[in-house]
Amino acid sequence: MRILFATSEARPLIKTGGLADVSGALPVALRAIGLDCRLLLPGYPAVIAGCVDVKPVCALNGLPGDVVANLLEASMPDNGMPLYIVDAPELYQRKGGPYQDIAGHDHPDNALRFAVFSKVAAMLAASDTPLDWHPDLLHCNDWQTGLAPAYLRLSGETTPSIMTVHNLAYQGVFPRANMSLVGLPPESFAIDGVEYYGSLSFLKAGLYYADRLTTVSPSYAEEIRLPALGMGMQGLLSTRGADLVGILNGIDTEEWDPANDPHLPHKFSARSRAGKQRCKSKLQQDLNLEPNKDAPLFGVIARLAHQKGLDLILAVADGILHRGGQIALLGTGEKVLEAAFRDLGALHPGQVASVIGYDEGLSHRIEAGSDIFLMPSRFEPCGLNQLYSLRYGTIPVVHATGGLKDTVEDGVTGFVFEEPTAHALWLAVDRALRAHADKKAWKRMMRAAMSRDFSWEKSAREYEALYRSMLETA
View 1 (cartoon, one colour):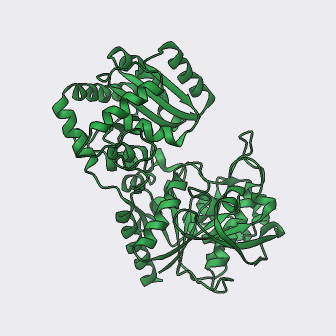
View 2 (spheres, rainbow, N blue to C red):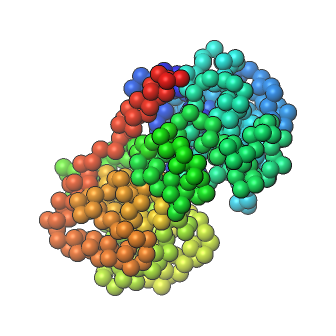
View 3 (cartoon, rainbow, N blue to C red):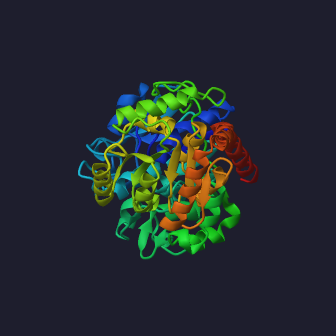
């Protein structure tokens, strides 16, 4: 099978969140089981500079806004994954991130930038593709590729498409005036189309016109059909319920392997865990925490946002510290939360370390050196840090939502609480603290956590089965 995997980010080339982790790993896993999967990415500076064997393919004509662009082919630097790049300097060669400028504001032409990207994805998947390689199926990801299924369907093309929602909260909503710019027919601006409360939604376009829909955990696939987490799309998602499936994300088990992790000062495994205690001691030293091997160390690695429940952690922090616990936080995001965690660290030197920013190596060391990982997200499509925690024998405390609910077994591999409140989180934290004090029980939980398999192969096999079913009915 030939799969064109269209995504706006993929590690190690460009990353803002979990989408990049999935896009950097799932296509590799698909190729490992025999599928001819190739990536399509926008030509950001980091993408073009980070690839190898970059060669021109063809000019791209007929794009929204009369944008001038070229198609490049290249390979990923670390694994040889083949990819195509939409080289449109006026859209993608600019300072800042993929979606925002250096001041943190959305690029004002994002509608055009990702309409062009979606259009190219549709062109490459069409019957008259400019490639000498014709995809059997187009796999789109999040709102940035949402117009691609619409372009395919509305032009009469029959190549099947699949739309994966990594986080329904990000919907690519733009004023109706952009309809003429993106080149969609006026009649598609309807409830049964791309219209979303009077605006144009790229994500809704994908959800309406794609042949099949997926999201990144079974529970999230159920949750987004209901008003609480449907983000205004629950009606459409309920209507398309038979076409919607949740496939749990995996993790890169080579990158996240405590027995071989180059970021760790000491290695360890499920069978030989002595190195984990040494990782904890080194983490305490590096973060200026008290060198107490018995203090339960709580790790937090998160985007500092309301969704992630960081306010709940602030609410229970005094209780954790009163019980002799320590907190090591790494993250960046909403300024009020950044300030609150800085203040918490200043008030409790030796017990709280708040690192505002992002550091890949430190994220690995916090996962390895912590005893307990806090992840009280109000909603979480899949989540990756709880999977990293399980692999590193760091027991997660999670809210029962989305992928957290699907991956953490209460009382066996972690602690799960039902309501996203400070009181419910504290009761789960209290259970974790009591278990941590029981060395035999804690070792039993660590062994159970580290024995779980969340590699990408299982997920890749599920996607392969979905692809095959789509092609059989196309």
